[in-house]
Image (tube, rainbow, N blue to C red; front, side):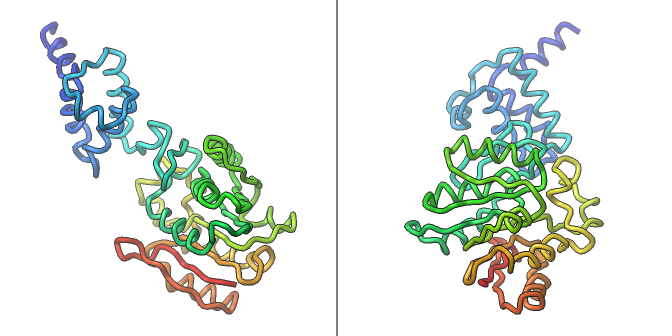
Length: 288
């Protein structure tokens, strides 16, 4: 038994040894190498590049235990972003926790499209509806500091995280609690640009997806057809968007035509579908 214990400890004794064990533990992950390196760098409080150059660097017993605990959480399906408490988005390193949806690379496409419609020297009012971690609102405010950015969310916990991220990057945002755009309507705020990444997964489909086990369902469940909140937001748009306002909505991979029809039927406006790098429907853009 003593020899076995020594062998087990030695198998985690260095960065290279721990990394080999981690890859085996996360063999069923979509990205075992990346997940292992991110988690190990977090435990050691070093940049990931450090791991490549210092493979023989020793791990203390406390670091081994912390790394094994992190791997167990990841093997159970918990997102890396929740385990380490942060997630890269555009040029940000955002604070994350289970109260907010993990920011996705696909949402960066929405941000980039919105930035193209906002000249750096213009003063415009911008709304991020359902802000979650504040990813879109904080990133936009950083890139367009002359703009006035409003962020809404129905979740008080999500708004607390968004406030932390805004404070971290020293951007001045106006946070408004409430359902969709109702806080803007109630206070008479009018905006020139609208961004929204609302829940768009159909309820029946969500229950079959692994993402529902860890991320907040309130940020994922889009109702019976996945379009409940998009449909409701479209009814609010005439009351808080100025004439010529640009609207950007993130959508599901097969929802482009359906959302375009909602816009045409409800607002009498044409729209364009923007596909992501995988060629899937991802953003719908239209102008009031």
